[in-house]
Amino acid sequence: MKRSTIWILTILMVITFIGLLYMQLVYLGDIIKMRDDQFAESVKRSLYAVSQHLEQDEARHYLEEDVANIETSTIYAEYADGNVPHIGGIKYSITTPSGVEADLTIKGDAEEINRIQGTPGGVLNHYRSMQEALKGQYLYQKGLIDDVILNIISQSSDRPIQERADTTVVRQYLRQQLENNGLTLPFEFSIVNRNGYTLMSTPGFTNIEEGNNNMFVQTLFPNDPIPKKNYLKVYFPTKKDYILSSIRFMIPSFAFSFILLIIFICTITLALRQKKLTEMKNDFINNMTHEFKTPISSISLAAQMLNDDSVRKSPTMLQHISTVIMDETKRLRFQVEKVLQMSMFDRNRASMRLQDVDAQKAIENIVRTFKLKVERYGGHLTANLDAPDTMVNVDEMHFTNVIFNLLDNAVKYRSESRPLELNVSTRNIAGNRLQITVSDNGIGIRKEDLKRIFERFYRVSTGNLHDVKGFGLGLAYVKKIVTALNGDIKVESEFNQGTKFIITLPLTKN
Image (cartoon, rainbow, N blue to C red; front, side, top):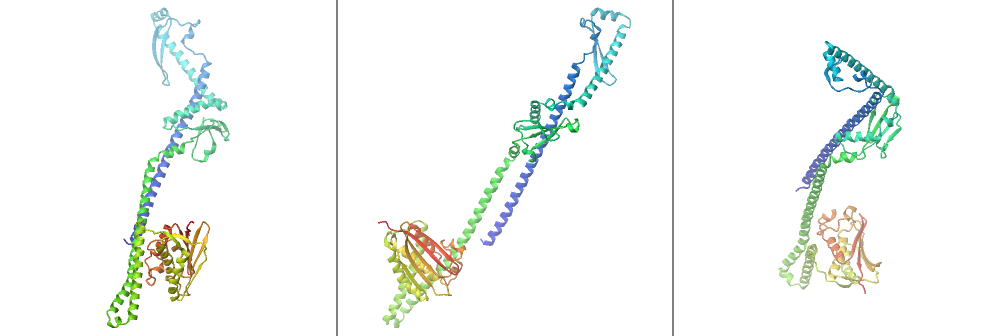
């Protein structure tokens, strides 16, 4: 798959996920707003009902108070002694001009009733007189009610609010009305006057919620004069939890979306890594082909020269051809061995033949052999081997390959604008360790490449040119070996200034 295709799919997936997330957030916001509006509407209905109940209680209070002070005027007032005679009589139904219906029962002594019934026209006259009496009583009661209403209008606002709206009664009404509207949340309330002064409140009431869309206000006794108006304030401490509880079903949706995002990121990352690995392997194959082609060509040319009779007759030429074949064979074997070692390290099967080795002597031998190659390119190799303790427990072959790889890289990545200066040094550091430093004044390494130079097949941009040969395995091999020897390696470099590799190995304990 092309890199451009991967990026197109990535962009499409990102746009799709952003759109999906946006739709979920919009839907979530609409649900919260709708739930909040429903909550506010239910609370307002409940508070209005509480206000109505308090007004009705006040009207009932005045009715009971006034009626209690008035003796009920009934037909029994005809009896001076106040004793009700034997119950019996006649029942009539009466409808007043205003449409009020009533039942009239004539009660009294049975003999008196019989006497009245026996008198011609007596019953009718008595009925009419009773009807007139009932009508007068109705008009009186109507006037009494009008007086009560006037008293409520003129005197009710003068009563203390603590008497008109008792805290216990208000709490009871609030709880009842909120439950009727489907709200069972805990609440706190207070009653304040027109100036905002708190007249009474529950212990948990606070004004902090005033600006948080969680304070609901209802006017108590709306007919009171404006200067004497009082207000009921209610807020719900757990309103936020109540609103959010209605969107819990959205949590799995967001969870699945984020899982999908993680899977998508992992898939794209793996695809890019696979693409990169494929490119690195292709580059490795190309470089390996080029590396193997040179020694094979040299060996092939030497074999062709051996077929020439004149060459076979010259001992000097035979010696030269023999040396070429041997050197190129060693070079080919070294490259193959490097690839095989990396493969075994990946499978954790590389065998290490550890022994005590004088690192300083081993480095001296490598420098002595490598010095000619450096001087061939017009460079200079110096060795400052000043460490007094240099015994380390290593595999001598792998240790030699590590130093050789670092020196070989310095030659490969030398600067064309100045002669190569290559230095190898040793010194003892704290912690009973030996530090080996290989530094050069070559082309250096950019900062973005420093973190990856120890990866397999990775080569810096100049390394992909075929005039600088290699598989991209050298530094990966070095890192593997040093780590396997319980050591550490780090690199310091500035582009176009040079590079320094620092290896630290534990000294052999005596």
